[in-house]
Length: 288
Ligand code: A3P
Image 1 (cartoon, protein in one colour):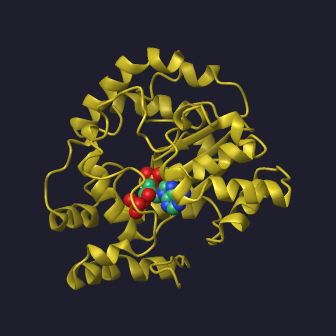
Image 2 (cartoon, protein in one colour; image 1 turned 90 degrees about the vertical axis):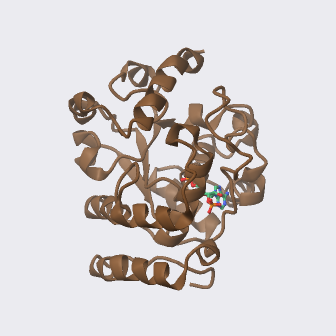
């Protein structure tokens, strides 16, 4: 019921996004001062890099792999988005949440609460290669009412992505901000990553439990799971799923179906040296 009561505020927030604001400047101080708990777990991502997938995994880790416990509860209620759904300044509802809180944010590292910057609690950051990330973000803009149901071309979208003129800003600046703060674990063996995340947050899971979570969090399972695929949200017009799906393809390398050779080169020119500088290797194809 708390979630439903928040809907008018959520709509307010949508208007705010449509006006091109991520957060009202007057809320920046409140974000900065937001009290982080030592047993919070924050998931930080650039949008469309696998947030929902990681959220479902983390939620199951926290529920000891008991799928029955989560199967009728919307993911957005199990892992709460710090700045999405209601204006961030209204943080009273976040204070009321029981520990341990699972939180998610797309804010750049420069704008997260200062206690989070100081590592008062654990943070997991997910990175996806920028080409697939851009394709996914393009389709996300096409279906998102709150982002104005983008009607422009892919080519124009690529330009906006490269200039960092999208909500949540420049892809590289985003990952670099968190890279400077935290150590990442590049690995895409799902059961192994689940084990790494569980170890990281101090939960010991049996092999069976890890296998169960990995199966439940496969793309095919998540695509048809209405608790996570955004098909069943209380606000009905947030996404226009006739254009594309929130759980779209879930693969590495779909960028090849969208990028021209020139656009691919533009991305390589803009990001490759920088990624090498900070020692970050990303997968652009399944065999990488
Ligand atoms: P695509 O649009 O390339 O299919 P986010 O949750 O950050 O918005 O990211 C959404 C992307 O993650 C989408 O990518 C979606 O299909 C993909 N995704 C979600 N769950 C997945 C899963 N279980 N396995 C693989 N990809 C998944």
